[in-house]
Length: 254
Length: 256
Ligand SMILES: Nc1ncnc2c1ncn2[C@@H]1O[C@H](COP(=O)(O)OP(=O)(O)O)[C@@H](O)[C@H]1O
Ligand SMILES: [Mg+2]
Image 1: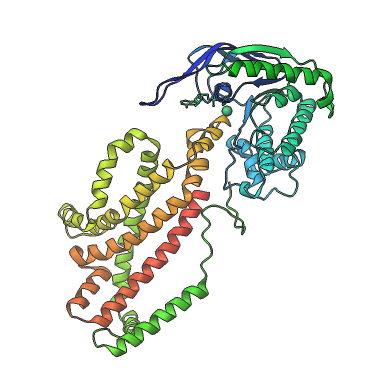
Image 2 (image 1 turned 90 degrees about the vertical axis):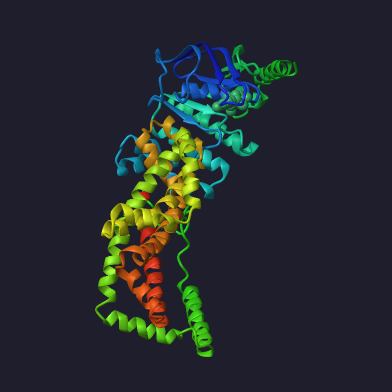
């Protein structure tokens, strides 16, 4: 479904800044319906990787394919959820959720119907006509999630979607995303710097090293699906986190 | 995306004018004017000016003159708005175009607009065209600079978001760039139309000798202060009305 082989990328600084090498031959395979969590320290190139997959920027060498075809721009088969939400401040919750459909020329009545369904699904009942600044961070990201779901992508790309939320809200949204993945069987690629999040959500955890990023290790978590709510006390889960922590610490202390 | 007129609308929603406060301020101004005038000789009292204005409105000179002026204003400002918004958007989006034009815009903006009037006169002669050109010159540059600034300070992340959801360049312009730039663009249009009114009067006073500007010049030359002030009142009212109209039209255009 997603296949990245030897992807290299250097951000060319504009003028005075020196170029920043960010991806140093990343290999990544994501199978249909799989939930892959890419774990890496801050600034290692995770967002860059997702932006490349979303078709927002190019890469220098290697292969980046979705459905076997090289990525050449944004596509209807992928939808991105942004770390900072990226909601339109002048649009209501409904209009924000329906934004992708509006771009595709879907009629207003139909988009509203879809938005209403998703509002229900992500638990924003009663907020359809609110504006983003009237919502908490968690609610804003629910809008971001619903906006991505509205275009019915096969692949969800999540860029540290819960990074800026408090831990209680984060846990709630994580459980929602797990449920969503279980119900829709969408392919999900999530990037995060949180060991707990990666272990809690992923079928597979792909560990990236510090910038310029390359894949250090790939671990099948082997944890049950659907994830029980008390996974936190599962021995395998605890061991996995311990292992990831140690690897990450060793990588970043050099 | 439709505009919603809810009380919660967050961006660019001008607070509804508090008419009571405005009217109180105006009434207070009129009273102060009246009292000052009664105490000095130079200033005709407010009541006299209003009387003169009513007389002018009854006569057959002001209204045709006003019609002439408003026609130049409408044409000149519409062209300035259309051209200014377009150029402002282009400059705001392209760094190269901005660097190329920055120095010229600065130069043009720092010179008093009156300087251009003789050139426009030489170009178009005593005609409606030079009237329109003066209005255009007064309004155009401020609209360009505010629009390009509005586009430049826009959140790049929203554009990326729109692109990720498959927006075309045209859709990015209409559904992201313009709504994001809206508050500042509306300010630019409002400043622009105020300057356009000024340009209208200046043009008529200096070159074409028609319209309200010509009346103003004639009454000033006769030291007819009451009529001069009455005509200034007309100009101020025109300016306020245009501001209101442009605000409405601008919002409607961007929200469509
Ligand atoms: N457009 C850009 N131009 C130059 N450097 C960039 C650009 N985008 C990101 N970077 C740099 O690339 C590195 C990786 O960024 P990013 O992919 O955002 O990392 P992460 O998401 O893992 O925190 C950072 O050091 C960042 O400063
Ligand atoms: Mg990031």
